[in-house]
Length: 310
Image (cartoon, rainbow, N blue to C red; front, top):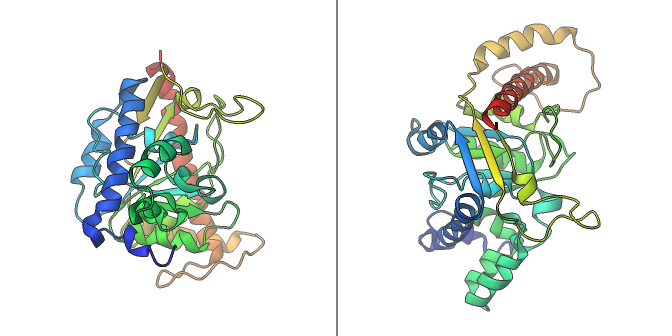
């Protein structure tokens, strides 16, 4: 199925209809959940709207946030004014393979009930139903990229994420690497996001954000250590969006090359990045520095959010 239906995930094949249908349905669900069934407040909403719609051509966008529930994406994009119904403008997102790719529509919603009640009944037996409900190529239709946690920054699908950035696309990541519903400081970030920034042909616009409330909409350990089977209503969602983080990557590369000679580490066999002269030690130095800057920015937003939430 994955090979024979691969065309379904391409932008232009079949007029892009499979992807448009998915984003219309899921975008409508996100807006209903964020704006109608719950109350959502957003700080600095104009910045992501402008960057998604009007950033310079061929300049990639990388949005980064904490991870409070399995429904953070797509619900985080359901706030008023955001173009969440537009498949062409929609994000690509890194999704944990062991959670989001276990069955059909978990790729996008973690809400099998929607698939059973809507897609299966409307399109039962059709190619379109197979496209939407099969885990591959549905990842392409839904613009999701499966990531195997613990497999490192050079795993196969990270190259797909890098290609998205090199194509000037928008990519969403959750660099904490897992859902955490605790009201606690931002945890040490995984290096995958930083490595994408380092390796991208054009340095992406990096936009950090923090949110809370999704842990109440989709609580973990709701009953017998299982999450709630469907989103809850009448909750308050708060989204704090920062300003883009500027990275002078050429300067940072040179600094990393000059500093890495003093590093002592156990090699993981990372490939040499040419033409920049970045061996594994220099890459580690860069990834660590970039991740720390992003973590600091996210923690600053979390602190600011405490006053915004009152």
